[in-house]
Length: 496
Image: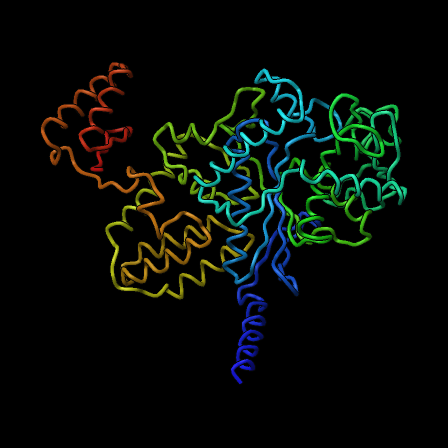
């Protein structure tokens, strides 16, 4: 009898977990360019693959925005009661500076930059060093890396070779002087993602046609290299960048997945190549049910570009005295499909907003357990389920915070519930945020006289632009147990 009851409970829990959310979850699917309702898979978790970094250098804030978006998407799926298996690949070889078959290998570029010999061993060491920095940045942005799989492309060479062999056997591939190519004319649906018309991609429009290519849109599955790489049926060389993702997805998640994400630059080439080679191998479609693409982050109205020196790293944000989660909050203030323009002024405004919130949390802590206000959580759910409308969700959150008719404990419960999606670490604010974010603001008259004099002296140094002296005085103020934040009018002082 006990065993029967156990099984009945298991079936109830299983079917309850498969219920379609009361608030439908709608996502903008690039495949078809439409807002579509996301229905959970019949069995097992939601399988999600996020195009990851090529780890030849530190990832800038534009790169990192892609993973905050992916984390918000995962949290939204979980908020709707779904389990998620998430994979972010690590490209540790074979990605050319162009997403087509042109340019220099990025990992080789990284080795040369650091004066290292071009070997597979050095490439692996370089990749692991920058992977560690990447994962550390994700942790600072409150992305739970322990729940995500991070496969290295170099660990899946046999799987990539096997896929290329299958494509060759099915006559989707042909050999050329540069390696093995995928014949895009053999795949009738090539270009369906983003509605790309390859008939208009004449020579020079997409890439210069190599002599051994049948068509300009054809792409490398295996790149020959007599000096470096792995042995294969086609000689020494490297798998093409596009086949890496397909092989890792098939090995870890299976032949069909639910969600695939990336940047808009991936649509025309990389993601269409993934679809073509994956569906050609398996004969099953769709390879991915939903394709979501996060818009680029601009820097002062210009593209973030390392080559042009216009780039900001998370470490730059921290060095300005800003908490890394301020950047996450700022990203949430714009919809993921809208290009956001990064400025230091905008980030400081985000800091002020988030600072106000976390300090309010510190003062309003209560031992009484509340219940999330139903009216607000329902509206929040509606906004976040409308294609991840994070600006709308934040607006609902702030409206709840300012509602004086609510009990403090209910507001706190509501904030903690909403933060399951926002990922700002509000429930453990004391551990999540830097002490400066939690510090209590005090007036100049409340300061000890010696600190008040230091503040006045620093203002004088700033007035004559003696930045070195101003920095020295800041250090003295902080050593006395206070932090200082400069504004357009007067400094704000906080007790640590």
